[in-house]
Structure formats: C-alpha cells, structure tokens
Amino acid sequence: MDTLDINIALDIAFWVGQDSCSDLAGMLCTSKLFRALALHDSVLNKISLHPYFLTPSRINLTSSSRPFFGRCFEDANPTATYLESLRLVCREGRAEEGLQLLYTHQSHLPHAAFSQALLEVCLGHYDEAMTTIASFISMTNSYEAADAFASHVCQQIMQIGPRKIRSHCNTLRFDEYPDCLLTGCGIDKRCINCFLYWFAVMYLVLC
Image (cartoon, rainbow, N blue to C red):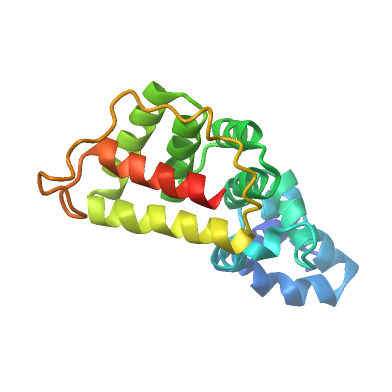
C-alpha cells in the first residue's frame, strides 16, 4: 500500500468501508498509514454508517462510538448529517438547527426527506412541509412503504432517547386538519394531510 498512488489507496479504503464502517476496524488498527487512509475526509464522507443507522443510540455524546461518528459528521457524510439532525432535535430541542442541517446537506435517504417534512410542519412551515411530504411519498412509491420509512424514523428517535422537551407544541401548524377518518382512510389509501398529521402528533408525543 505504501507504493500505491494516494487516490488508488483512498479508493481501496472506501471500498473496504462501502458496506459498513465496521469493516474499517482492521485498517484503523494496522498502521499509521492505514489509519490515516481510513480516516481521510474523502473516505468518511462516503462510507456506509449502517451500524449507526441501525442503532442510532451510538451517536449520543456519551457513547464510545461518538468520536468516529463525529468525524464522519464533520466530513458531511449524508447519513451522519441525517442522524445528527435527529439527535439535535430530540436530545437538545434544537429543531431549527436540525432542519437547517437537512437543508444544507441533502441526502438520498427517504428517512431524511420525511424528517424534513416533519420538522417543517412542527416549526410552522406548512406549505413547505406539504411539498416535501408529497415528494417523499412519490419517492417511496406507496403509502405502505412511506409508512414503513416514517415509522422507522420514529423508532430511531426513541433509540436516540428523546428528552421530551416539548418545544414545538406552540409552533405546529396545520392549515387543513384531516377529516377523512370516517371515509376509509387506511395504510394503503391515505391522503397526504392525514399521513403527515398523525406522524406529527406522534413526534410531539415523543419529543
């Protein structure tokens, strides 16, 4: 590896961590060179943070896994940005900053799109929220899939450990409250208003 072109060496490091950042453990413990490659900003920006995504409590400040995650966040890893936005919201009540993170670093994750819509409506940005949630549902192709992604976001919030600061009860804004409960609105046939409303209620209960 010492004689390889630096760009090729970095590509190898990224390839090692492409499926999971845990696979970089060997490189981190091997030598100073391998550690430097594994912690290079171009690698941390793109590697998979699947272990953190599955167990988001690992991103908390008291977690022994936080330092590595923090490096990935500093290097604008999209998954790290999404998870940090959730932590700011549910652990510190800094919803505006969490939303700004999602605006600044766009992610391909459907979870991030849903979280953006959720924060927008809870912070009083109804029109923006309806545009974002429509895009999210279009991205997921069905209300059933959208429900699965949104439910996973709520599970991640619970795993991070919301402090129930209740900082958004006075800013939640719905221009049209859903009135479709008696018209057969269900998981496979649901209006956008109803979908976002009930998840917003769940968010207010959690946070």
